[in-house]
Length: 121
Image 1 (cartoon, rainbow, N blue to C red):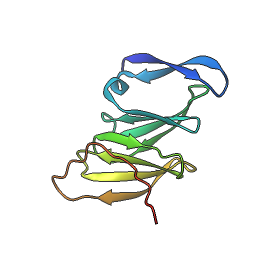
Image 2: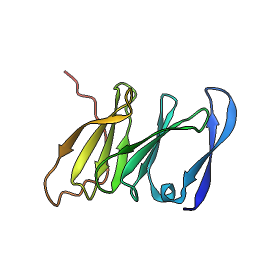
Image 3: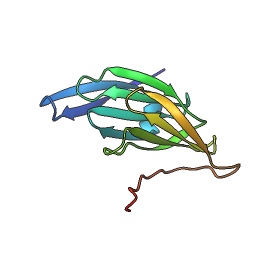
């Protein structure tokens, strides 16, 4: 598997670091929040969590088929991943780095993007 380097500028430690990502990440989606970098891997059907300060891999989390969209809202302890071939959305716990639930959307829905909108009461 080919590896590419991603340059990250860490404001937390005021340093430049490089994260080695397999080539699959070239067309995947990246989100950075609270010191973690989240990368969808549509080839291996997982999400990889990196420490944004060091570039270390924290976990490779299995999700549904062909994860594409991802959002990691700061005000929640969750990451939401749309699984295009899985017709679902996986919900990952930031604390345990594991899937806590999968929301099935029905055959043929093929979710692509996902966005978190905070409800106002």
